[in-house]
Length: 460
Ligand code: SF4
Image (tube, rainbow, N blue to C red; front, side, top):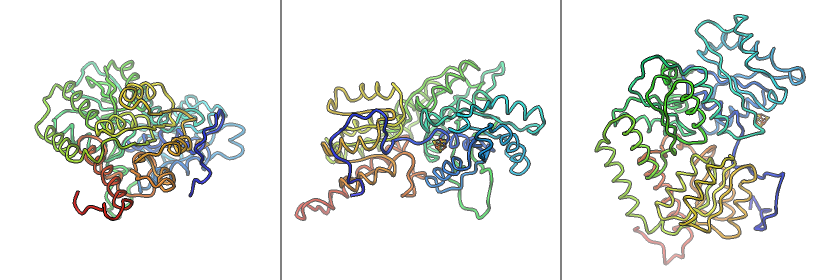
């Protein structure tokens, strides 16, 4: 009974969030910055913020996460962090030699009102940024938005500082990746390669946060979108944004800056969202869909059909990021399950509208909510009012799952108590197969454990 004080009675709350379904902006900016090769994220604020952001990512990915900090003291908190950032830039280039430093702000530097444009320009004028090296920056005040906002702001900064249009457009499709695991990015690249499409995926955390153990420390792992590719995104003929919350702003910026048209679709989680991704890539790359991909799809459909009796009508509660929850809700409906409670701490109309479109007819009793008041406490109260058969979300859901004795599928960020999530993709038909199996195993293991003895079946 870890959450023994949760009751089923909801009380109107205006200024209180309990167990938020989100985390803070700079974590998203730091994660996205790691997806550009040779880039060192820099946290402009106190050491505590940077330590928290690094440890949140390290605990999830089980990999060292490199980042630097302006190390605000009492003095910089009062008089501003300009001197700290300037000194940090000089030290970073002389000691750690990155190609790029990606500065993001924190609550403290935003409240002080540090002007990053002015500080970085002055550092450049004073010769503190070596030739051929770059300092980029974005604003990530954590008292608005969430880690997804921070991720989106960092992507927009990549476009602002790097994407360049030359007179010649290339037959390349940009793939702007929303918040996904490194394994998801690897899978997206595999699908594009199977189709023989020329693409630039940005950012790309594969081979950065899922590196093999070699016994040698590498400050800048081999993966990440190269600076040359990031610059060349301005010459591509089209951009597909994967996840509106994380990528739409960057897609708009790239169109305005370099005239690269775009389409934003969902992250390809589940059957239908993957169909849309494959069709969009085939259309914009002007290539046919290969048989290998069609066969992968067929095997997924077979798996779903074989096990439909276990999915049918099961009530599901899910929480996390909107770009994940929207296609996941659609996939649960494809499985004939009932997504009844859905919450995300990230605010935005797109989530509410998508949920209405998906659920109004098929699951009219469903409750969904986004923004600061859409917290896990509220979802737990809904579960107490009418139980569910399955819970899907990040590690923090385990307390609810344990208290209510519900099977629990870990998906999202952070997952700190189980390994493997960054090895097995959730996107594409392969990812949907993994997800289907996780859900199925969760349901069946719970059934084996809790059903009357005479109902325990040896064979499915
Ligand atoms: S919420 Fe603000 S103060 Fe807290 S860790 Fe995040 S950036 Fe730092």
